[in-house]
Length: 220
Ligand SMILES: Nc1nc2c(ncn2[C@@H]2O[C@H](COP(=O)(O)OP(=O)(O)OP(=O)(O)O)[C@@H](O)[C@H]2O)c(=O)[nH]1
Image 1: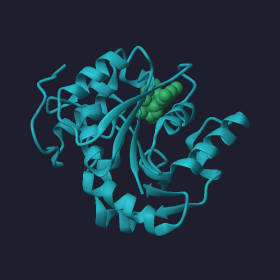
Image 2: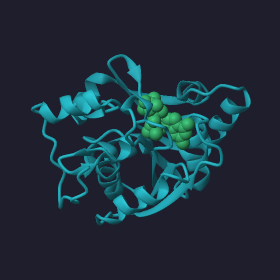
Image 3: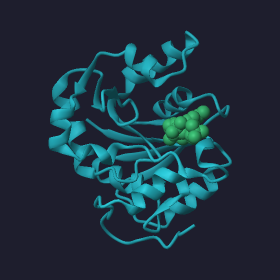
């Protein structure tokens, strides 16, 4: 099965104030770059979904590192229509049969976890494998069958529903329960960093934040 990675990054990061959270850095590396580096060894292509105005900075950040997969952009036709619209755009662009879908703000995501999700999806015979963390399904850290997910996004949007949970309702999913998840990764690594305060807490925390290979020097 060919594999894509989709990074959904077209939001306005309003909780981050006037900063673009995808480019906020942890140990000198923008969160978007950290996510791209985590997913790219596990896939054949990387699809970055964002707005047209974000693309130049995102392209520059991603070009500053060697990624294991080529990068393609799926640009939102209309902005601020929510993550399901962005996801649908990215799924239209993706050429893989399966895709891991992640946000731009998971800076501690690990390649081996992404690999395990893909393996689990291959074995599961369902349209998606979705982890549960702290009791909540994580549609933005899951592996999907691209064709099924695209159809589910379209059905959801046509019904004027805009939440990623609504997309999951349309799909036959296998849930990666917390006990198994803890064997695969530290659940804290799947915590979205959506405020400056949560980024600051992460900087101060004793969790292993290193990612392999070079740093980019893109400190902001
Ligand atoms: N393409 C697209 N992506 C979105 C949109 N809204 C959110 N996202 C993405 O979905 C993911 C999860 O959304 P949030 O964490 O709420 O991000 P956000 O909307 O930028 O942040 P807040 O404004 O602080 O809620 C992030 O990676 C966002 O970039 C949107 O309208 N279009």
